[in-house]
Length: 166
Image (tube, rainbow, N blue to C red):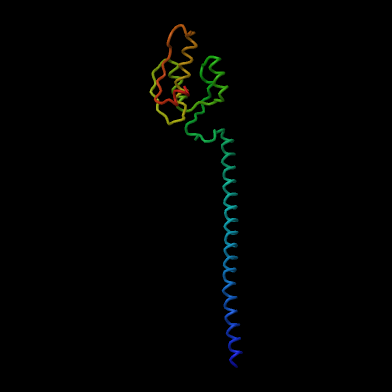
């Protein structure tokens, strides 16, 4: 080979190396795109599976008549209708959408209606406040209490937020 041919061959060899170097990043980019597409597909499948699980859980709740967000552990099977309450109190409870009592209510309200003292403990949101207010309201109704009679019930609340609810 002559010297110009050698230089030309070296230039071509260098050009081929440059082309190979350029091709690699494109190939890597394509592989990255393919990998991202695969991850997207996996995420979609995962989301579909989660959506299916959520739908199944909601259907189970509806079958069991369980309130979403409230574990069935605090609910009892005792309906409010089983209590011998005045018509206005029964109507107010039904208007609020309550059908069944929680466990603390089912155990405390009947005893309180009999005039017994009750010391109850249950977790937050289990219906303790309603458990002691229903008997208090019933007492006032049955005694035909009038505002002119003075103070009938004193409710002591540990927080402002609970006082607003009561």
